[in-house]
Amino acid sequence: MNRKQLDGCRRRLYRRLPLLGGWLRRQAVYELVLDASLEAVRMLAEAVTRNGEALGREGGDASDADVVLVAVPSGSISEALGKVTGLEGKVAIDATNAFAGRDEQHESLSHEVKAHTNGPVAKAFNANFAVLYDQIGAQGVQPSCLYAADDDAREVTEQLIRDAGYEPVSVGGLENARALEDFVPGVLAKIGQVFYRFAPPGDL
Image (cartoon, rainbow, N blue to C red; front, side, top):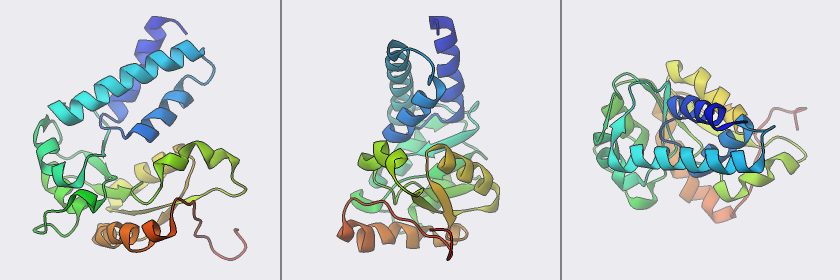
């Protein structure tokens, strides 16, 4: 993979998900350059990390993005999205948890995101431990990723969950986002760093 091809991959990835969380960004990088050299992987990772962080922290234009993944501290959602233009009507995936507080005038953190994008929103990836991500492929069964989503965000959310190596499990519409946010400190954090799987009988 030469530098021109590498830059093309970077631009395609950046366009698809301009606000990438570190672990999901890393997997997307490796998938894109699976057959390339380690040097290409390193170069692409650096390029995407640099651009992804700049858009989230310093503002930027998301007009060309297909999907926006929001992965910022919960207390900074409005501040971060307020610096980004081109969000109107975009599909957004909210991966935040309320460890840094929340604005209680919104039903959930995802609804706060929706107030800025005015488009379909999904809550996903917040109930998965990033530190365990590199171990997904070694599991005997595919781990689950719980999500709640508006109808128009459901398809792309399920695809990205599968791309990340998880099996998507819907908990319903976005009205259930707060329950998914509360699940993390209320249950998951008390168990510790684990994978989990929700499946009907016969699928385990």
